[in-house]
Length: 87
Image 1 (cartoon, one colour):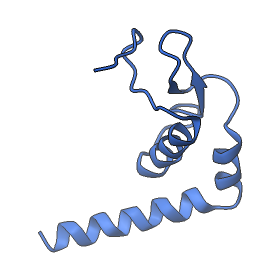
Image 2 (spheres, one colour):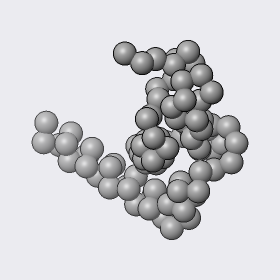
Image 3 (cartoon, rainbow, N blue to C red):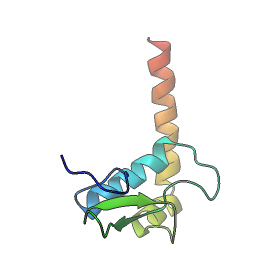
Image 4 (cartoon, rainbow, N blue to C red):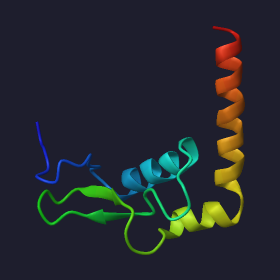
């Protein structure tokens, strides 16, 4: 099994890392200025990791600006409520 010396979860492609980034920003409520905002290619393992440092990823910024992240976050909250109600 491939592991990175950083101990971070890795993604084989930049696209997969960006999907994970957007998913994380949708699922979790990070305090202002916290949480992952971009992806980078690791010098050790050559795969991609999420990072909370640097500028905001273009794909994430676009979804934040057009409201997609907020809409998806609200939809997830309703789905979780319905799941709890029917459990």
